[in-house]
Image (cartoon, rainbow, N blue to C red):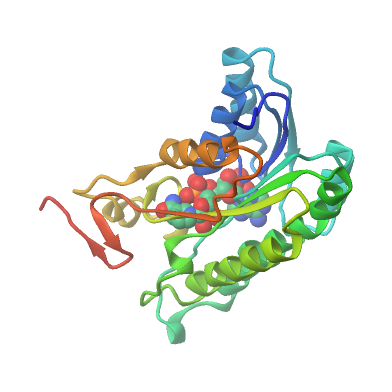
Length: 255
Ligand SMILES: NC(=O)c1ccc[n+]([C@@H]2O[C@H](COP(=O)([O-])OP(=O)(O)OC[C@H]3O[C@@H](n4cnc5c(N)ncnc54)[C@H](OP(=O)(O)O)[C@@H]3O)[C@@H](O)[C@H]2O)c1
């Protein structure tokens, strides 16, 4: 079993949902955390929760937008180029309009965040990992990286891109003690739908109505399972959905 104690972990999108749950799970394991997101209040809240529950755990905040040109420098300075694990999690869907009705600004934000910024993080940390001859990367893909659904054109396209990138990075780095992995969830009850529907709580709540979605803690537990595998084992990808979901478009609701 891989021991996660004192492993230095960079988590993007740590201020809510899956990233936040992952930070708490890794803190329980004694990892040293580098927590990145834009909302400093949410990160500070998380930091004090970690301090209360796991006082011995070191954690550092990196407040910033992964699309900013200075983000690489901020990460470099804070981590001193030493990262054992990258959880490439920050990402979002915005809007669910048909192609001809969608707004370019929404497309650009998804493409910039889910593809460009996400890939640039691997470009930044892979050389550090290769030099250290050790590293793990978990990319947050989605079942939207495997299926398609109407209204999800660009979100699905970005996650298909993540899927391709993960596989290629894994091929390029194999045999060098780097484990490049991916987790692809279906519906997880986080801020994801509130962000997608631009703060419309009614639309967001309807996504999870009368069914039992996955919780962020379910994904964190699976990611810990992936990371704790012995060093010679890579879980290439873990695809997970709620029991009530069969595909992005098939959800069994109790009424
Ligand atoms: N929830 C689902 O059903 C689901 C299913 C499959 C895959 N996923 C994927 O899982 C990942 C996490 O999503 P989630 O469900 O946990 O949603 P969430 O609760 O909305 O969390 C998204 C996180 O990403 C951060 N983020 C977004 N844009 C950012 C940026 N430009 N710079 C820095 N941080 C940014 C947000 O922090 P700030 O706003 O504070 O910056 C937040 O911490 C995403 O990649 C998503 O595509 C989610």
